[in-house]
Every structure is written in C-alpha cells, then in structure tokens.
Image (cartoon, rainbow, N blue to C red; front, side):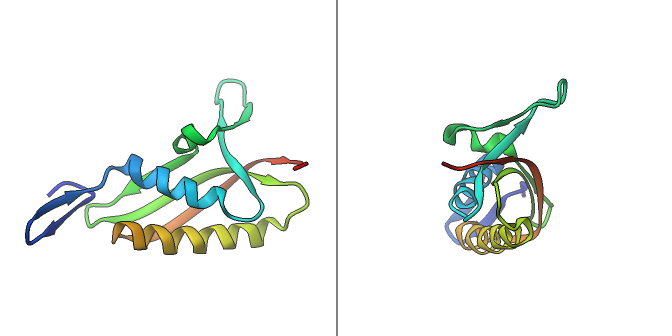
Length: 120
C-alpha cells in the first residue's frame, strides 16, 4: 500500500502530503505569535513571508511507511513573543489537529524560526 493510504472496508483512502502541509499551515498561522510561514532563498539567504495561498512552501511533510508524520515548519514569529512558548503552542495545536484530521500519528514537529516581524 502507498504511503499516506489507509484501508477501510469500502476501499482505500490516500491523503497527499500537500493536503497535510496545507492543513498544518492553516493551523499554524492561527497560533498566537506566528506571523506566517517563511520561504528561505538558499542562494542569497533572504527570508520572505509567504502569502496564504503558498503556505505549503514553508512546511515539509515526511511520511514513513507506517503512516507516521514528521513535520518541519519554517516560521516568522512576532517581535516580543516568547519563542519557546509560541513553539510549544504551535506543536501541541498542530499535533492534535493534524492527527484528528488525518487519523495518522504525528511523531515529530521541528520548528525553524527564520525571522521576526513587528506587528502593527
């Protein structure tokens, strides 16, 4: 069976990693202290804030053969927040909601803080 597939009595359900990334990204940007997802240009090291339509570029989804997820988030946080508590909140929210949404286990969530923004 393919990665991301679950067998039911009526057939097989396969969830694309893009769908998981998009959902995880929408949960993440709702978290307090997260300004948004970041895209890092490897050539010049510039970080840019991703628009809502392209959140998935700031998230990598790794799916093991037994449907266990590992998520990497590249985020921009709000200036003045406690990064550790914002990260803890993001991790627990995403873990709970993605597991509920997909029926898969989230084993690891790695957060890379790529920038800080002042929010008006």
